[in-house]
Length: 295
Image 1 (cartoon, rainbow, N blue to C red):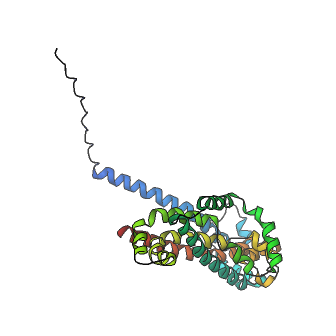
Image 2 (cartoon, rainbow, N blue to C red; image 1 turned 135 degrees about the horizontal axis):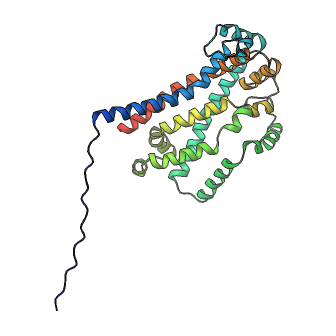
Image 3 (cartoon, one colour; image 1 turned 180 degrees about the vertical axis):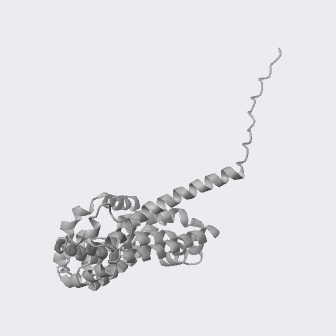
């Protein structure tokens, strides 16, 4: 009885695609650059428009067609801001609070994220789930109980009422936990343990050098969000000499709401420190990513 062999399946040959010509590559690169420049222009346009309004008078702002170029009244409008409100003290207060909150968030969130990512302890998953639940709750729900806590502690009107409640947050813990799980190899952790390193030594010598880009992003995000915070400082601060910059700008708008040039000059001065921090932080952030890729 003869056995017929089944025919072998014929695998189709892969047809090599022709390489794009130099002209096509140049057109693709040009299209990519145009898209990037268009996105950058759209992102920068609100800041440019803020400069245009801050450098013109209110009558110039209402002209039709509107002026699209900066005017010559920027110094005058800035002088009006300093005449109407005490701009320096709120600026210093906001800078102090933003730096303190950023430092505490980076420290406590990285410690908690390191423990959640690399250590197995009883109740770890349940505790992390509770952290995520607090992340999903709106901030407005916590204002009343948080204010009652500040009253019981006697911190109403003080700077620690702005700093201590914001010293750790669920977003930072979640972000750094995910980052540490992928950026810190278990082999390095085991090597540090064999060398006699405890928790803090593993955190300082192994974890921190590898998560600098993640810390850079969280630091930028925390600094900007703290700088722009308005609702909680308005609720908790009672001393006019301790108000933050956003509250001072809101008071300026409430008292002189018709002088848009002066109001936008104050907003422009409040935005310049953020631009400086962002440019410096973004440069460090990209540099850390490049160093990590080389390693």
